[in-house]
Image 1: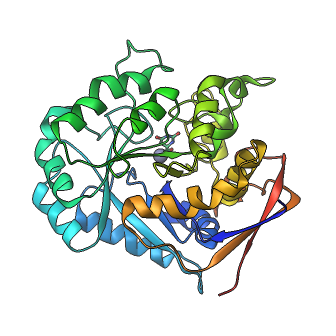
Image 2: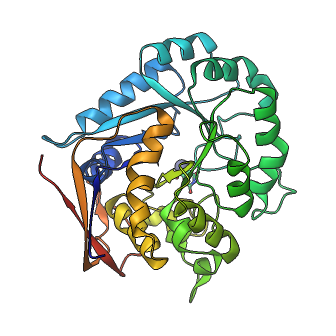
Length: 349
Ligand code: DOR
Ligand code: ZN
């Protein structure tokens, strides 16, 4: 297959940041994706409905003229999240999902949840309305090895949480292990799903050290060993609607990545769909990409398929150049300097 046409896809997990970075990174996503689930881990985080409305307005103001793009807004769950404000945000159609970051798990997560037990009133609001809880599924217990944090979170927290709230819906974000795939599959289709990133489909943890330390391949949850990558790719290409596209594109300036203590996050917005095509093509499963990218996520969120189409054309193209910010700093895309096999074309409406 050399040309693949599909409905405009959705990115169900992205970091757009704010200010100059938002202006610089948003056009790449809006060009290709009809909608994106926007992570709330700004500084300070998006915690109330009013915060989400204001952030949504800033995002919409950054969408290039003539481009049709809808941000799906999320709230950052804290120990103080007000169930009444959440009800109002959901009722007004502002809040599409709520994100759970265990405190300290990742970038800007220090405001996150310290006690999962205190969340029951908020989880009841979500469960009653069918609004998904998006989970960063890693324990923060320093005793737990960084490569085991996802599997331990599932056992200690995710399973008990779903048992306590039998109608709560969950998206296990950026799943990175075979255990996460098994966890998702052990629940009904409309109950638990997972997003999968391009980096976790394309690379295993050897890639972090290939010829030297590779900071632009470092994200959280960290890349795992090969068997896990294979389990994720099998899930992504299986036609199971519980697995769908969420890039976790997480822009950090080059100097914040190439340093003694570098930030976690892979920047994939400029070439995301081509990266997924690369992964699916490698296992001869390109025909499964349209459902994974354009249908399954929307279905789980209860949204219609996007209007419009995009086309992947087999044609070698270099990974896009770094994105330049007004202050001269740059954001380096994943696999910079390498060549991709796919070019993305947008069908005019
Ligand atoms: O690698 C990551 N970067 N993982 C996350 O969970 C957060 C993200 C970010 O915001 O940079
Ligand atoms: Zn993320």
